[in-house]
Image (cartoon, rainbow, N blue to C red):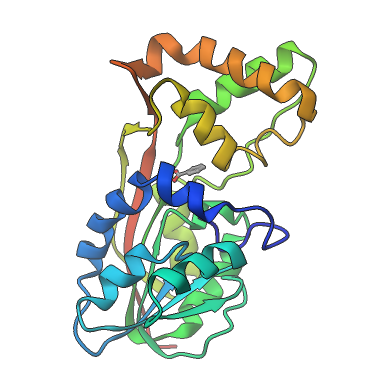
Length: 259
Ligand code: BEZ
């Protein structure tokens, strides 16, 4: 799921995302609980992907708009939830007019290095007192995976850079405050995450999410780098037939202060 990946409409496979990575929205239900949506509230779901959590928010009676930068994801969301409103757009320049009572985001914002632009546009879409409830990858998220990919690529002469934004509590709280969002809750926690697909789980995860990470590896070398990555990680991250990725989540609640 991504709201702002460069070149929107660029190969997100919504079917495979829904079939093979259900943990993304299943685990996100706890973030909806934290949002605690109420009937009649206007809520923006930033980076809604295939819309499952948008639907969970709507079930509360809230008036919710799902936003995503991927046409493929939105097409799937609209097909599954024809009664909900989904808008194609960039979280750095929200194409929907507020004010919203709340903005919500799960597992999307770490795709956007320009987080200041996101927070600026989220803050300006909220009414004074409106809340921002979000979860994203936090500092150290999937670092074992990234380090193993880097080592495997480097052994073949290729450089790998993490494309993701995984802030610490301090860094993110500072950014929130800089945009008039008062931090009421912020926590960073380990959340080891079982990947679907058994022995193929890590390769499937890299296939779904790793294009930018593996951008420096030529296509015809990619399978070898993935195999070497699996080899390096198997002792630590493969348990009882399942890959368990070293996810770390940053979860925040912040409130828009009056200008
Ligand atoms: C995450 O949800 O933490 C995540 C998903 C895909 C790539 C990187 C991080």
